[in-house]
Structures are given as structure tokens and as C-alpha cells.
Length: 395
Image 1 (spheres, helix red, strand yellow):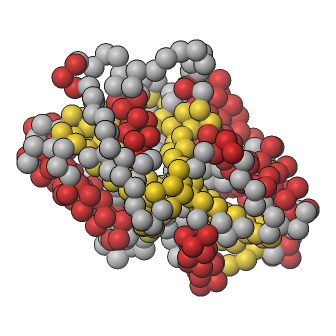
Image 2 (tube, rainbow, N blue to C red):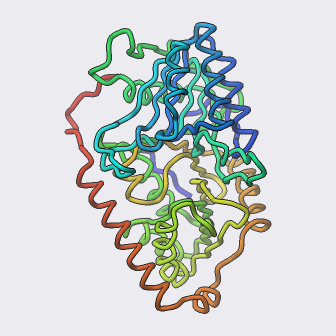
Image 3 (spheres, rainbow, N blue to C red):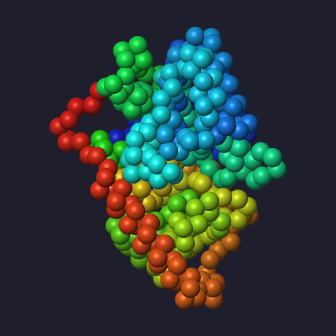
């Protein structure tokens, strides 16, 4: 796999792969508990449940020992974050805001959404992934954990992460006392020397870095590719790239959820099964619980992990953050884990299975769901503000 120079990977990093469940939430709590100066925490959902209160209590402990905390929660995704929790965090001195509360009514929204999930401590440790803060990502009360992944990273790219988070926090209307002015004066490097890059999708700032990275990875794939996708609805360009990769002999496996928390979206994805199978791309469905992962590995060398879904909502309607990792040893271990999940917890959807289950009713509902989802995404795309490339952003 060839890597275009525009990706600009940086070396000197230490990373850990985190999977949904106790491993992930214990890591988040540890990072918060070890913070001494400041924390940026930006996410889509924090539920008022046992897991949500656990992370909130960790933030409160940090605030009480003098750590300055910036907590940005999406206004649409964060509706389950109760007024009692808001009062608790604000009483503890945590700086709390909801992202883009406008144009939301009765569960419907048309504004740009904060979909990424990022925790940054003291400018030297970041956790970036796809998991929200809720019991369903932990597996509480006897329920199976939703499958997802994140990366804990330390090293020079934390400076870039801080810049992304500050730009989102530092809106022009907030007071000077609430603004984030932290800087990183010394960029530590680690002997593991992992090469990586943190990428962002934010249409309002003319950034579609993750989409371009996916396109490049698919275009340059030579041997094999695994994609775990929770809400899979790629556009025409991405489908063409997948088709072309398959035609030149790339072994492609796409893993989707057998049961989704978004049935309409799932039916729209099922509408694409015919295209996928017709182009000799293998489909697997994850069985134990909801698949919420958004990861990919190409040629045992390049990996990406984060909040980005392969659909136009992530391209043009949401703020997303991914970590692209260029390291064969990490990719090898991660690919082995994904293949184990594929063998032990997934079923393959063959052409025969799909043909046997295909009915006129399913085709019609699939087509209708596909057109409806695509239409809604076009509306969101049209509504999303886009700044001129000459506009300067406040860091």
C-alpha cells in the first residue's frame, strides 16, 4: 500500500488499543484521575446512568483538586444528560457547554453535530474513539457490550488534538475567563515511535480529512482490507473505489451489525447488499450485540479508528475525529483481533443467503429507506454552513 505524502504522519508516539467495556472506561477514569492541569472532554452522548455518573464523578474529583475542565457535549446527542448532572458539574467548577443547541425540536435537528469522542489530559494524553459514555458501551445490567474501539495516544500529535478542541470550545461569545488558552511548549517523544496522524471532518471549517484518507486507503490498497462499519452508507465515489479495488484483486471484508439501533438506516444499508456482493466483496454481520465500531485496516499496515462513519452525515453534517496509524506491528495485532471477532461472532452473508431472503417487500422498503436517508443527508449537507477558505479561526 502506497501512502501519499499529504497524509503527513508524525512519529514518536505511544498508543494503546481500547475496546468497549471496562477496559475503555477504566482507561478514561485513570486519565482523568492523573490529570494535574487541565482536561478537554468533548463527546456526543453522556447518559445519566451508572457509567455516565462514573465518568462525571471522575471529572468532579479532578475539578476539586484544581484541574481546569472544559466539558463540551452535543446538544442533540446529549439530551439524556439530566439537569441534575449539569448542576453537579457546574457546582464543581467545571466549564460546561452544549454544542449547537439551535435548530433542534422534538427530536429533529438540522444543524452541525459534535459527533467525535475525545478526552485530552494535560496536553500529553488523549483518548480518541467511537464510544459514547453510557451503560450500553460497558455491558451493565447483564446486557452485552456494544462493540467499539478507541485509541489512547501519547506524543507530539497531542498538540494537534489540543488545537482541534480549543477551536471548538473557544466560541466568540464566551467570556475571557472561560476561554481555553493552554499551549504545549514541549512535545514528548516515546521510544515506541509509532507513526500516526489525527484527522478531522468538519465541513464548516473546510475539513474533510477523514473522507479523503479513506478514499486514499481504498484507492491504494493492494492485498486486503477489513472495514467494521456501524452506519454504512458510502457515497458513489466510495462505492466506485471499493468496486475498483475488488476488481484488481483486493480481498475486502465489510462487517456490519445484524441488529441495529437505527432500523431505517439498517434497511438502507441492506439495500446496498446487492451491489456489494455483485462486486465480490464479502459481507459479515456481527451477532452478539450492536456493532458501533468505525475502524478499518488495509494491507496489514494502515489502520484508522475513531468516530467517523462511512456516510454523508459524517462527511458533511458532523464533526468527527479519527486516528490514522501507520505501523505494521500494531496493524497486525489489530487485524488478528478483528479476524477473531469475524470468525467467532459473525455470520457471512453469501449471495445464496441474500437471494433466498430477498423479497419484493424488503426490496421496496430497502429502496425507500435508502432514498429517505440519502435525501435527509442532502438536506443536512445543504444546511451545513461552510466558511470561506480565507476565514481565520480563533484557536
